[in-house]
Picture 1 (cartoon, rainbow, N blue to C red):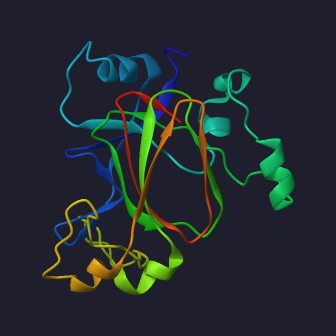
Picture 2 (spheres, rainbow, N blue to C red; picture 1 turned 30 degrees about the vertical axis):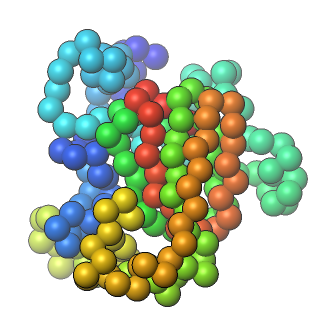
Length: 201
């Protein structure tokens, strides 16, 4: 896989698809040889920014099919419980500074950690009234045709309680998913995710 081109999100601060200074900012997406990404991750070469393989839409099966011999693309008991195979199977690998900002998904998630750890801050749907949730059309480049993106302007690790005092009523849960463990995350649960350096999930 070394020379294969893969999609890598690059940000200045580790926050991709996140609110930054009241703007919804998406990462730069670079296509680079997988070996070059690993060299950056392993600090063999230096490059400015935070690098993270985090593309959605089943990147394991679409972009990394070579890994399927080592990683099951389906968890049979989960498929049986939900009555269908997964819609998407994603592969994440990145630096410890790569963060997934607080958001919710409208589908069930099963996080499987192969190596390292993922640290989750979770809010059940019942915390929704206490989490600021705004809509808007945000893009660094002006694009009048951009669709509205619902966003959460709050960083739960450092909440601005003067701006969002209702967040004090939210009761987040924290958990760490370690190598060989799984986390089932029901749809509509808000989640903010951090990881150990080089975490594979």
